[in-house]
Length: 129
Image (cartoon, rainbow, N blue to C red):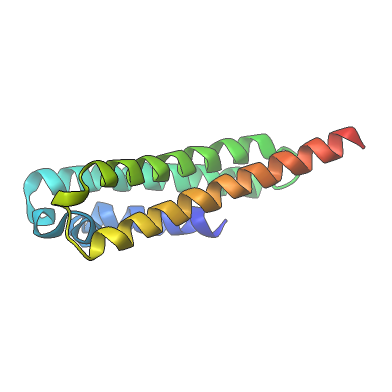
């Protein structure tokens, strides 16, 4: 739930001030028009994924976990792909902050994946009992 809420907060920040969350990722290029457009688009993606996960978790926290798992898995996948995109451009990204971006996106991807696996394991245990 914390990752989903954080995703919404980051997404809203990116929609309003796209250069703020983009600057650690792409450096001074965050002020360019193209970076601001893509920053807002990524912000919209994060708002949608975060709100979807939060809504699914609040509506069906235990009764129907499949929906919430799908949203959390989609968020984890997007975070993992953010890591892949960063690694593909590693040498062009700012030296210090690229580590922070990869660590935060990678941590969110691992947290989401762990939550999905834990939920799937719990459902499998419940079904076999």
